[in-house]
Amino acid sequence: MARSGLAAVLPPLFGISALVLIWALVARGSDYLPGPGSTLTSAIELFSDPFYRKGPNDQGIGWNLLASLSRVAQGFGLAALVGIPLGFVLGRFTMISRAFQPIVSLLRPVSPLAWLPIGLAVFQAANPAAIFTIFICSIWPMLLNTALGVASVPQDYLNVARVLRLSEWTVFTRILLPASIPYVLTGAKLALGIAWLSIVASEMLTGGVGIGFWLWDEWNNLNMEHILIAIVVIGVVGLAIEQGMNLVAKRFDYRSN
Image 1 (cartoon, rainbow, N blue to C red):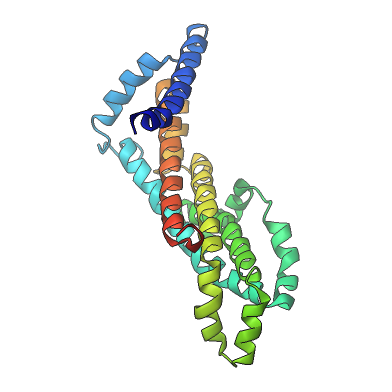
Image 2 (tube, one colour):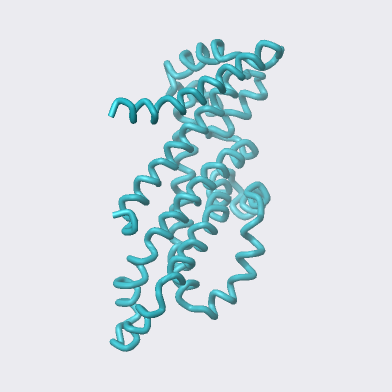
């Protein structure tokens, strides 16, 4: 057990140590990039009071992070409410899927920042525009993966349901939903990652309160230590979101049980 524990811990620890060493070497030859030591000192000072408030545009990193997570939750929730049911419809009915295929193929590759001006024009406010951007960018993985899961249900199951004259609701609850849950959760995990990327980019342009705005504000102040801290925080939160979704997906994936 001790050997397996070391085998699980040592490689990541070695990788992080190598990254910090490269960072220190690059910072030593740069006039602008701070090193790990000064960044750590700034991080300790920053996180000693993460929820201070000195005005609408001067708030602690904790408030900014909570504001970003709130927008992600709202945009992701709306995308799930629309994308998952629509994915079931597209996977169940071939003609509807063919009708929607050109629309999905056209809109899915559009960059998140391209949707932001549309949101600002429609809602006339930064916060709903950012939520709209998250919604429109995170809906596609859930829609496509759900449709794939429904379409992957063996035709024999549906033939038996037709012979037994099961209602569409019974087919959905007894056959389609249990078989497609792993696909739905995979789509949700991908969508949540895209939502987190989108909100950071959106907040850098819209301003207000949020981790993206905070990062851009620190750039305007030329505070490179805080910029590096923001990058680490964004990465850690993204990793936590991904690992949380992995646990949920593993819990409900019948293929791993």
